[in-house]
Length: 204
Image (cartoon, rainbow, N blue to C red):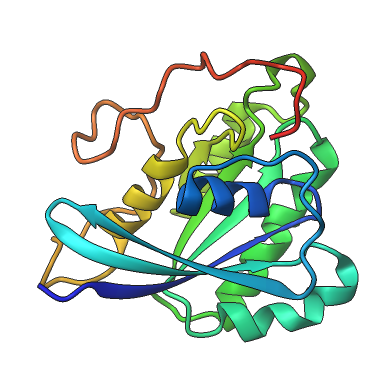
């Protein structure tokens, strides 16, 4: 079976860890103090999910305000978007709602949206309540998880979940998008790793 190509963009404020998530997913690497993305960067990764092959074409967009006007170039025609915030920075969460409002207005109607609260390893520095973010995601029928690019918690699972939610009736039966990684009552969802990711001390 030929691989399905999936255009995916990452959106979110500067410094929330978008590039670190992509690097962990694509190369299984983590680098301290990655330089800020200019415009956008592009990487690809092939994965097998439930016997089906997907090639993610990943556009990692810059978080700085001066590059915001360029974002439609990257999310236009995208099959999926991951909107990232930093669980240790309350000020990064309102931007999630702004990006999702923009996606709802301008992106394709069947785009799969995921919300990722990154840096969950820094539990002692948490500012964004998990329940608040999860409830918002459920309200808008978005996938939700918390990730750590540092420890790799839920990175692979996030992309696998997106693959399962892509609207292709010939491959997958229709499913409700309002899911949270680790909800054990939804057997098709990957089990979220226990919150032992909290290593503390480093950026993720």
